[in-house]
Image (cartoon, rainbow, N blue to C red; front, side):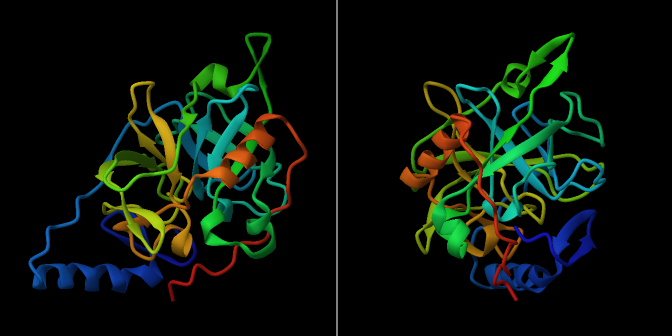
Length: 267
């Protein structure tokens, strides 16, 4: 989701370019008798998902990220368009709520991306894996996964699967939101409909329940940086290339340099 120009509507931060589209979509839906789009709701959050800041002294979080289960216990997933440069110095605050970070603030050390994103920002590859530095807790060097836990990186999203998506609208002391919806495909991009996913929710992990626990099958990103309205969100397909990037990050290999994010194409 683009976090560029915004306006305030009913207490939420809504992309300005998307506002007219949201209203028109609402009117069109009523006119054709279509089922109303469900609405997200505030939540207290979970330890594995948190707010992502561009730098340590930033007061406003601008994206969302989640902890991925990894051998090193230090890996996050987010959208590639949330990162520029090396990613070093960004900060992740898991389960942040009301401006407080109950599990601490963790410094990003590197970003890992597909070559297709680095070269041409292919929306099909709008996924990034970040590594974070350990922290000394009670005198012991500790990796983030040892504090928050992490979600397994799952297989490709499937149409009809139910997912739960928790994300952080851009802001300072606002709470996260959550919604459960079904996946469908739009122009080869997994998508779901639920209102409230405004700028800042980019990178939010899509969690699909399995017999082995929740797995990440997508992140808000991809088509138009995740969507041009707050009611429809997309994801890149999490498949072979994304898994290869995950393994590079988890192995602690040298990170990449992310290009400055291009226009989301919503205007």
